[in-house]
Image (cartoon, rainbow, N blue to C red; front, top):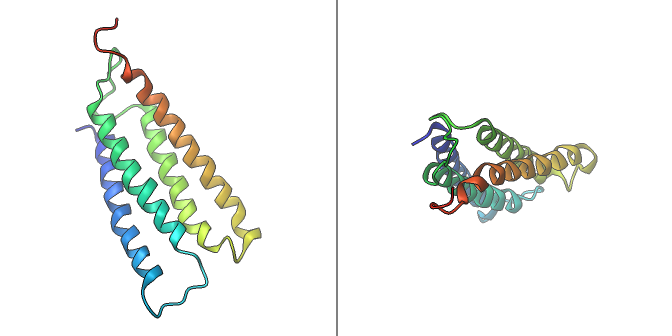
Length: 137
């Protein structure tokens, strides 16, 4: 398994673990939070866990075609991983406080969206050439 795929899958499992903890904290009876944790939970599960597991496995399993990447992964693959995770971490630390301190947290929040979109775009650019029919030359 390529190094990049291992990073995606291990990161996805960490987001699953911490996402469940965030859910527990947001729904535990008797705990009253002034911050909103449910959006953080949904992003940790949807983008952190599910999306990263899918990306890691697809980068591992789809054939690489004419230009095989090294065992460590391609540059665009690493840009995908780093920008998606940096954007997700920015979102986790900014979104809960956005409603209380909008002026302070709006820029990290908007930056998180841009980094996540960059990560998704880079993934599409990385995986698209691998989706050609096998017999096509």
